[in-house]
Amino acid sequence: MQISGKAVTVFCCVAAAIQIAYSYFEQQNRSPKQSVEITETTKQFSAALSTDQLRSGDIIFQTSMSPQSTAIELATNSELSHCGILFQTGKSYSVLEAGATVRQTSLETWVKRGRDGRYIVKRVAGLSDEKSKALIKELMNLNIRFLGKKYDAKFSWTDDEMYCSELVWKMYHLIGVDLGKLQLLEDFDLSSEPVKKILAERYGQQIPMKDTVISPVSIFNSDKLFTVYTR
Image: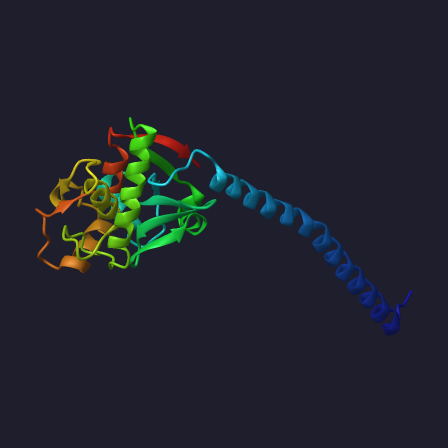
């Protein structure tokens, strides 16, 4: 039996209409589920922000997604490549960090920049409530002193510019709490290609092996800190 050209055209049009209708139906049924998942993620994050476990002055650590993070991880033999200090205003938290400059970044934004949204929060151990409040007040005053300083890409130990763990260490040092072990640049594992590349880009042939350095993982491993929150 022969099928006319007109019949073929009608069949194609009907098939196209069915395909469009199916795609629309599938999209309509998928979207609410996606919205629920997004809402649940937001709720979980909000819960983390409002938890009583967090406190101003806490130190927060993550694996950064910055271009130099891999080199830091390799040199320090640790996944922790970025850190900052938490401060609370009302019900919201921000992180004092050394990024492009020393700045306050909302906790939500800060966490999103880290690998898989994971972070660990630590706090100085053995403080009474009174001593803890005094410490937080001193840190808030120092906050103003460091805000706006440029990022220190060469990890020097001057106060003119700051990198993340240097900022945390010096702020606590200034209130009488030394966290972690200070090291020399030569103490780190500088053998991998990503590390060598970073060193060459920033120092050329004059690598300051004897310069004092503090790493995020050194602060993290301080026996003066205990873990209060992990996400």
